Length: 376
Image (cartoon, rainbow, N blue to C red; front, top):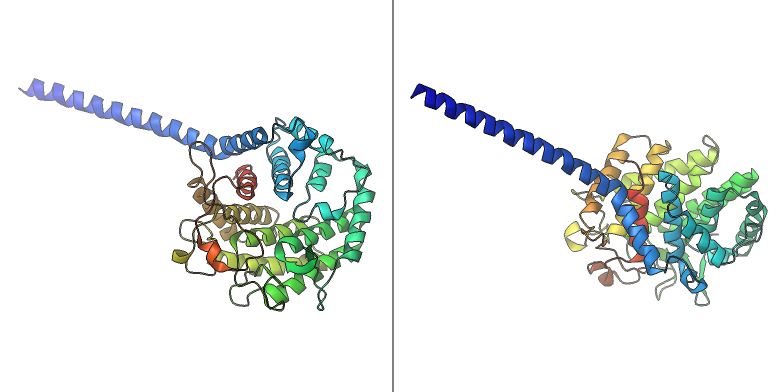
């Protein structure tokens, strides 16, 4: 009887060992699979799908479209830079070739209202013939843009002029890039001054988040009625990108970092427990849906700000990582990206923004490509 019990116990021990080993192997391979999904499969799958939607840029019709096309190509360029993977370089080269782009010829600033895909390609290829035309076009932009009575730049839309944070963020970044190319502090000063003007007119004093703009409502002096998630991502993009091209300890960079810090502090207070920012972040989270494009943009640029030392506290890195994990929940196994706000940017009526977001809206795909191309 004792022998039978001993044999039985040995079998139980062996079975438990087998289960423990099996569980360990499963967890090991699951962790590898999850890591590969997070770091490689998501951007690769999204880029491949996006290129297929555009016929892999085989004809001139494939490279014709609105700014969201430029946004996604810029995200692909950033993916190449972050990962060193040149798989998509041929498609990128075809994109610019089919647009008849030449580095030595200026691209009118009107063609790049919200992003700077041509500058991104210049960074990738390092063709110095791009520099002078780009500088000249920046000077033309600074000279020609309509400004409010306070001096804030405006975007022209349907023969009228409006303040819009989506637009000013790219202008701020462009001015800083032009300062970097020329060494002329005039451009750094212009970038900081425009941020100060927009901050004084559109930033909510308590939350430190930004209204979308001014002039879009019937009362042209009234600001848009709330903050919008992707708009905050746009604004963070402009601040962080501008700082990347400013002399690190200059008076311009130091002032810009102060404004970045207050804005980032405000954003952290609106991040929900799971890591997401909601479409209308000034509302209680129960009254507005989690939103992927804004969350991914905020997380991406917050990570870059921390990596570059513009935001030095680790809580910003933690928030970025938390957001990245949260965004993964909105990417299905077929790599469709869900809960992307349709927009548009001006935000004239809050009710339309309370609806659930779209799937595979290009504003979201570019943001997710950026975020999941990062190493963290």
